[in-house]
Image (cartoon, rainbow, N blue to C red; front, side, top):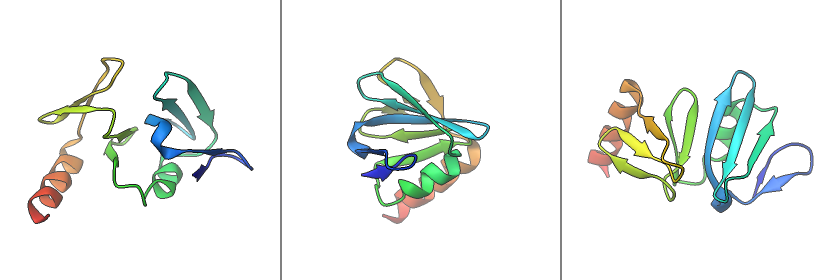
Length: 100
């Protein structure tokens, strides 16, 4: 369980992706429901760090790789939205993949 705000908690397996907008994060669940929290994406990334299936692909998106299909540098989400890796994060991702 990850803490959202106050006592609110959420099971990470239910999260499809997170979008950061200024000082807020929009959490999209696998059922399509969206939750807005007043935490930055950086804070949410730290809270999800122990879950290896969450991947920050660019400055404004964290994906749950269980719900996204990857085609080279592009992830396709269940709602058909396409999210592209940033150049720097793509290099880091490739380095980590070759070292494993």
